[in-house]
Image (cartoon, rainbow, N blue to C red; front, side, top):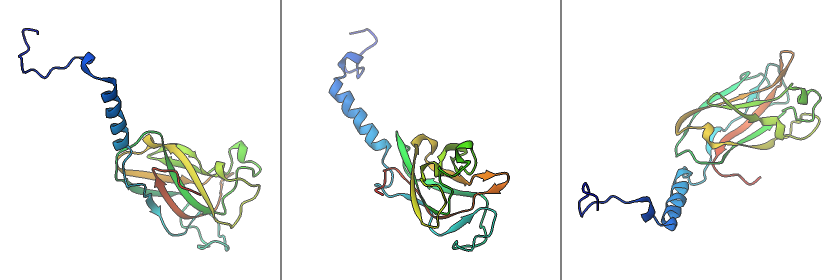
Length: 180
């Protein structure tokens, strides 16, 4: 015993930690760090919204509601490790196989707290946009969010100043990958 330690000292050396105890601690920490809503997604938009710059008579709102979607949302739990999921129900969005998409035109960018986390229509197959409602699940790094208030931005792509008109129906974020 060192002179500075008393017989009742609670000082523990590194060699006294059993690897199984350390492993249990880490598993418990990881489990707690991803706990938020018990798997329930955070709803951000629950009604139709037309993004773009042109009248589209086949959309719920023929006139555009905005050029860009931006919404504040509260993430109620801890920030986990790995991926979170943006779930978007959308129609009339230009798919990735459309001419010019691979050149950077028409790409709908997703930002969380100002950080780009992906291109939404990169996950939409086809050569032409459709009025059919599509569900897109975009995985992104959980660490793009923070506990408390966050900002989600959906910025439709454009070509020569012409914004890609699209209609959002539902937008939510989940800590678990949804079943299609």
